Image (cartoon, rainbow, N blue to C red; front, side, top):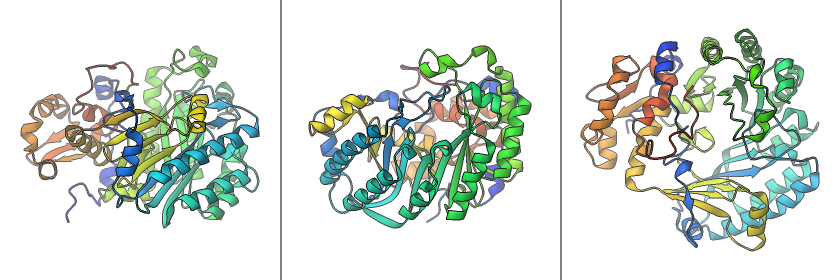
Length: 467
């Protein structure tokens, strides 16, 4: 069957034009669209809803499992996450017992014998767990779920906290993908954000992971950190290209000390100017694409032979709460404090406070406290937004056939709102659809926002800018 979102030409996906004037014109605040409706539409969950959602899910849909390990040994000052900074290994042991209880409870409600195609350990720092705890958790999961032989099993690591045997243990368990933060390779920047991580350590971890056969390795970078300059960021990117990760995530640092306590330790006077930040991002895009990386979208890059890049060219890329994903046909089932699940039309989130999450588990309760039930109209708009962000394209005939509408008529107001973007060469609107052009690719979220019914009604100022 023809997939209108497939495009085998890698040049299309590498092609991105950086026009600073247009970026400043359309650089609005907006969601990252890891879901639609977004997490800001969460409402308190009614009693019995989570059990019903788990028990009634489509048994033929495979599972993607997410496990949230909230612990870190070090506080990174740029961090805006809900993490627990501790040195006590006993904390993770206690947490595992509650995690096991939650897993047993949820697994007991699932019908059939669902196949697990994807697993991700995130946090926090999952490698805060000892090697024995990682083995224990993985072996326990084998008793609760049926795993695909060729599944995608990934984990976030902290190179500073790896034991000599950890990567070997992970590979032996079946993990085949790693992700870790580098953020910046300049020591002055690392000291300012309290994450000192020598380049030699990064290279050593990369070499060991390659030796062990991990098939995909992601590195995170951040632009806009204290003491970064256009020249220093370019130097970091050049060195990272030489390290040659399979994927890269390049995030914009948003300084919001009024919301994130850790950021109060960053001296605002040390931050680069907005103009320099914009130049850093443009230079990074140019350097990575010239080095052969495929620009996936928003802040993600991948080598052309990586599964993510291939999925995009095949028109099969998706987005969920983990960002871009290659197995979007899966239901996402989250475990642990603050974990999010996406099951059919339902989005659920566990309690975000560890003490309350722990008490709910001890009381034998399911742990979701927030919920969104998407309706058919939400499903339509989600489909449109995700295809624009994943494939830079909205195909009218495809949407019309899938949802039983006349797409140009249904979205007449939205298409009119795209008029200025079309006049500026960011999008092309034709009788067949809407395509985001090279000048518009890094502003894809601004295009997607036109189709978001919830924007403007409330929480318009709860987002960071697109760039």
